[in-house]
Image (cartoon, rainbow, N blue to C red; front, side, top):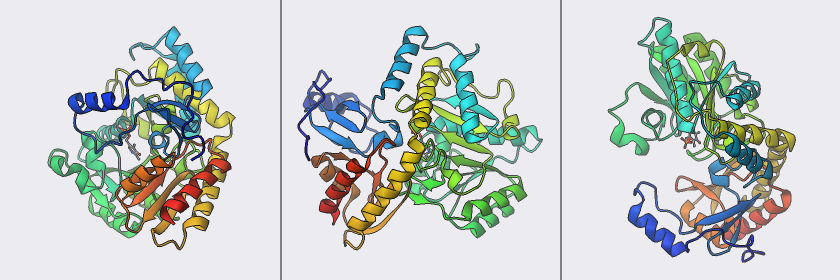
Length: 412
Ligand SMILES: *Cc1c(COP(=O)(O)O)cnc(C)c1O
């Protein structure tokens, strides 16, 4: 790829790749899947540079995190300014940025109240706790079970793992947290019978587009039926928008495509543009689940994270990135279809906005990631058969043309 050997003026890191890999293999917890032997040291906009000075176009954005591109100057400036003023105070005191961000989040989600944590899993934990507390306060503590969808992903903490509808993730922990039930995706009848046969369901959680599960948008009409079933049974409906939120799908929130409103919505990933943060927003009614002392966090909603998120939201809105996501997402899917439809290596291309999956007939998705890196492109995977694209929302046609050309050579 053109420019692959240029770099940003220094690798930025102190150690060479071999030293870094050596330290990691000796000292870091052996918990991640096999890692790609590349270490990025600098990023700007759509680009990343590694220890060897190689440049890449980033079509994965740190798993949907770097929505405004790497090191956007406004986000960098907001973090630097806040860091030099005040980084942390306890939640025993009022925090200006937290109050401002809660207002912004409620406006974006049309919700009544926000709670801010440090990650997606924490946002979902807060949602589950809120749903259970909600019924507890209504004198129905037995209403403490959760419905989620098969193929879903909701996080790596114990309860979010339990909610994750994939056996491989939680087999060793299954017996520890009870009351999670998995419903097949896009099957409103199955959802209805699960909801009506179990009076103890507190809440249901769905991703408008399943991300880790392979980029599966929910079908039109399905969420409306789920909403109706939840209303009838009094079940709180939680939308996990941790991956689909903040413009990713071409609307500010993924569920806007479906014309259905949740009781609770969770956000993270793109919200901090790279700074760790997660948020749980609830309607005024659902938010009555929390009273004084019911939940807490040491770091969540701290000044630094809130300054970062406020800057990210300003950039997303100010630069029209939701509209760009919609336009570039349509263009990307159309170009992928033009270049790859009918090719024997590809069985499906699907997505919404800039959240796109290419289903592979035979090749392992890790192999495609490795080959695309050699071509100067960072792409991702969802499971072993789906190549996943989650570029920053600033992506342009020219960059998409380059990617599609490289993918056509690789998969065509
Ligand atoms: C990434 C993700 C999570 C977990 O977020 P963490 O910040 O890794 O805890 C939860 N739900 C969805 C849909 C996600 O994509």
